[in-house]
Length: 396
Ligand SMILES: NC(=O)c1ccc[n+]([C@@H]2O[C@H](COP(=O)([O-])OP(=O)(O)OC[C@H]3O[C@@H](n4cnc5c(N)ncnc54)[C@H](O)[C@@H]3O)[C@@H](O)[C@H]2O)c1
Image 1 (spheres, rainbow, N blue to C red):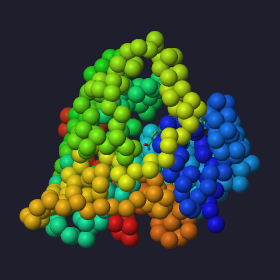
Image 2: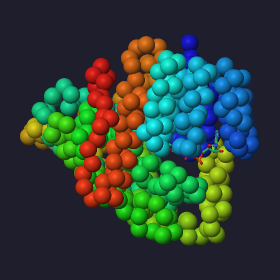
Image 3: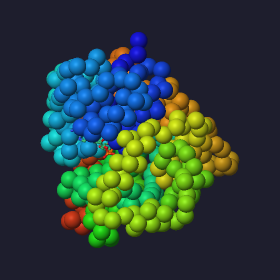
Image 4: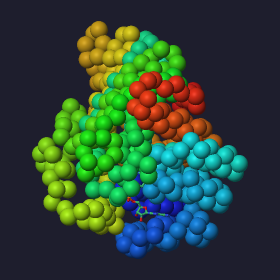
């Protein structure tokens, strides 16, 4: 029997996840909640399903057994508490929350009721990342020594709500892009980071939040590496992946700096919020199904083992070994959409097939590492981590 999903928050997150929910063989959309009448109207027209103004109404009135929480970060804690109190299983968008105390409250609420929770999507769910980890944990190419991840995007110049440009309200790359990078690196390395040493850049007074970072990290087993992020919308790392970007599709490359030029034509924050709404789900609906054999890429990711460098590619995993280069193709999750593996993990947890890998404790450890990046940037010294958890063995 299909699991029934109620969506909370019909914005960009739902746009990115919607087709993976819609086309998964084990789940069906059942309802949605959003305070915006335009977003609710669009959902009713697209799916002919009930809509509500709030998560409270959705939890009481809808027959869904899963709630997908894709509301803005500041609501994640209260929305999980509401969903758990109604015995709903939970798919929670990243970042899990804005503080470790909120993560603890979420973990406690979910544990108390005994529902399943997966925190995602992050790019750690990308099938090539999972396949790379399997090669590493099997020891196929010897011991993992180093991980490097480079991601250059137009993140800071996509249309934003005001709080998305305010770090104290969860804006900038710290809460929005580093959770992807940190989750990927922790997944590849097995989870147990020891410390991070970082620098953050906030270089545009008109977008007053962090847009760039370099993080050097070390795992407890001695593996080390670095992740670099720039959201300043000039070079894009999709260029290093045959033009394939975060959605597994050819990036619409209308030229270097196009995201900046689009914003320059706007007249202030209201016009920007309006553009965000118009280009979001309420204005545009869901994008077409991915219909591609290619995987999302989130920059250039290379794991160095004793006997090979292995690299995330849109086609799967590139293996650069003594005998030369080979490419191992990697299949999608059960729903054949680019985020199907997120749904697989939650459904398997609900059905008792396997406990979730990316659960509350995992996501809290990822947030801890992101917050440590900010602290290291302030203090100028490495920050040790205390809440790290290992990747659960059965899903390597
Ligand atoms: N994993 C990813 O790749 C990805 C991509 C985009 C967004 N996200 C996550 O999704 C979440 C939402 O971000 P977004 O970019 O979709 O924002 P958005 O502004 O595009 O959409 C947010 C939606 O939530 C609705 N909303 C506001 N308050 C609400 C409430 N109290 N209850 C229910 N709905 C409410 C808004 O009306 C809007 O429709 C964030 O946590 C973000 O990190 C994740």
